Length: 200
Image (cartoon, rainbow, N blue to C red; front, side, top):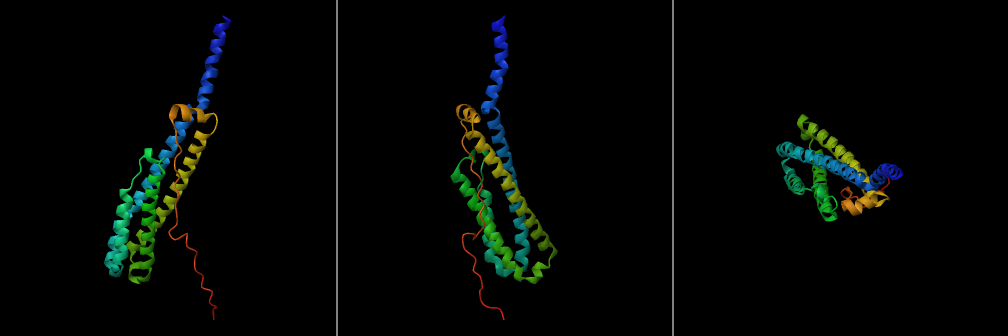
């Protein structure tokens, strides 16, 4: 009778100890990070979807900017051709290729928007202003989704490295760390030049 009671009491203890070894927490953290990555990809895709409309508006009003416009279109094609599956999120080389493609698109898009500032007739077009607002909003959404993804990756990477979850992460799941997204601002590595000439 006493041995039956001991077995009965051991079952919940064993269940709790197994649950505390990453059996559930590791895949939960991993799925959360993958879901946040899906949000990142959707945000980048929505930005890419705005570019053909922007290109059409700029092409008609600022023919002199065809070279810059071509750079944007080519960068968009490269950025949309580089994709990551959830299984690629622990591959630093694939993440770097995705980041490079997106950063190149951001840079060429920024150059285009700066160059069209000199065309008053373009800046006054309602279609251009609307697209400019949409792109600005999309850049904000990209920043938010990247922040959320990086936080989910941090939580996942912490989970698979800390006790007792590390047991389930290594033994059962074979978990590998995921790569955070390192967004870079084009030209951020170059110090700005200040005009120190005295003002009259």
